Amino acid sequence: MGISDQKAIPLRATEWRRRLRLDQYVRTFAFYGALLFGSLLMLFPLFWMISTSFKTEAEANAPQIVWWPATMQFDAYAKLFSDPQWLRYLFNSVLVTTLAVAGTLISVAAVAYAMSRVRWPGRNIIFFLLLSTLMLPPQTTLVPQYVLFYRLDWINTFNPIVVPGFFAGGAAYVFLLRQFMLGLPRELDEAAMVDGAGHLTIWWRIIMPLCAAPLSAVAIFLFVANWNAFQIPLIYLQRTSLYTLPIAINNLYNPQQVSQPWPLIMAASVLTTLPLIIGFIFAQRYVFESIALTGGK
Image (cartoon, rainbow, N blue to C red; front, side, top):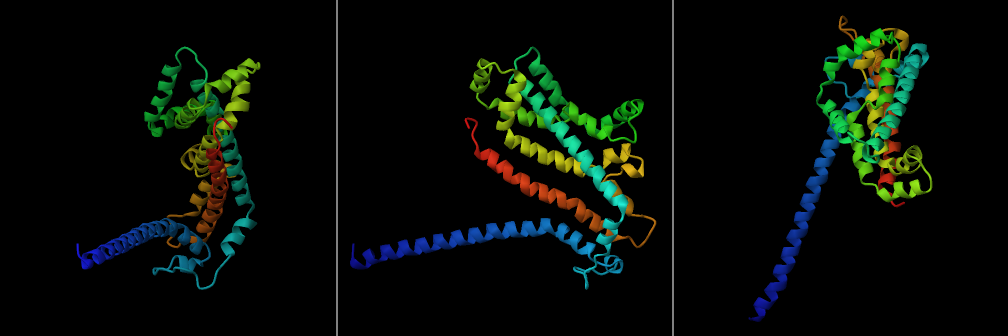
């Protein structure tokens, strides 16, 4: 091999490393560019909602697109906070969501414990029947449920929204928690039983703390679902004093009018969305902290 060939080998290696580095830069730029584009696409409705809440009705109903108001208007927010009815709607949403989330979370955790940690005859059959309810469209149960709650005289009360959650209303959540509990060591239960603990003590003091991660995830799903619930409250809450925020926002839209109060609608939507964003930010931290903990700890 000549001297020229020996010099060419390091040059080829250097060129190859340079091309590889350039290829990595291009891939990284394309990856983060796609993420940025997707983020902007998903955040655009939130931007439009916030910007519209500060517009005048003329700007919001203008035929041309007004991306941002010429002068920010706070009249829509002032009208919402000064109206005692909206404070009532907020209280109704907080009450219904809190009771439904708490009841569903405790009940599905208890059922998941019974399905995973306790051996009893017919357990697998009952679990199969529970999962089979996931194949039923929710629309098929609306009429039977309405007839049942009507005969119980629960129309125009919060009971049809809150009470079903206390009876493990959510087969998917039971399945999620059951699968997680099956992965916990059986030695934990046996050690507790040796010390004289019963199933209730084991469930509450040992299993529940170890299930903080899936319980946090289920709590987030339940909070979002109940806070944004529209169909069920619309069916059973027929009095204005019982309205939740989604129903109250829907009633602001009048299809018989050409000009709609879009700033007021969007301001109410912003105030309704804000607890979801704040709740998810705080709950997300607890989820990741819980995942970092092991079952042995």
